[in-house]
Image (cartoon, rainbow, N blue to C red; front, side, top):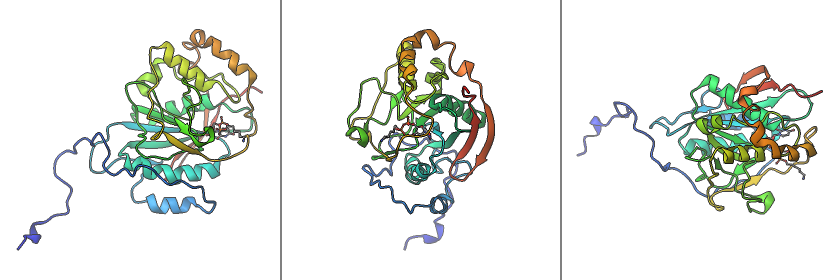
Length: 288
Ligand code: UDH
């Protein structure tokens, strides 16, 4: 007879092994729909036992390959955030990441600055933990395949390759907006994003050029694994396309060493820890 009495449920003794290269519990293609009666309380209930305050997670059975900060630029998109948290936490857990979710909320209703919020997220996340990879994600983009890993590689990686809104086609070759993963080292090498792109447009192309000028190229998953669904919405207030931004793209090489992480100036108004995220409200010092 089997010696059942000798079985033990204790964790294996000794230090944890590194997590495998390919996470073992991925599901592949995902079903994603945006039902209106989704509540954050449900998500909190479901994930309560595994997440730590601030939207933090670490695989319990192995040492994660990377420490990843997910940075989301935000203002007045709570409905989208609910869906994002509902779908992304389980995906990131299956991907066996050591990660934290940072919502960087622009205070007030002056002109929006997506890139500056990203820079702030990078700086604030590093104050909390020794992250080595940053995933910058819009709040309204949900991956349709969990094999699209939210981690960094040898080159900056653009993850939102095939978005439904653009008929699942990459709009242009140098695009780096939507969702992208960039290591701490790569991000520091280009001095982060520019802080001076106010309103909609250009800041992601500026970063793409910075990467190119520093000799990096953009890596991507293929267009089947890199599929995304975007939550439908109208234009936001105070984030209209800014016609000046396209002209600024001629000056990237000239400006990148003085406009970025090394010139970043802002004020933190509040840091709120939820189970599902760290919510940081900031004054980005928008022009009057
Ligand atoms: N964002 C906010 N609040 C704002 C503006 C932007 O949270 O008021 C964040 C959010 O994470 C968003 C991202 O910044 O996903 C990028 O915003 P965007 O307006 O550049 O991009 P998005 O793809 O919209 O969300 C594109 C224009 C939509 C026009 C729709 C007309 N049908």
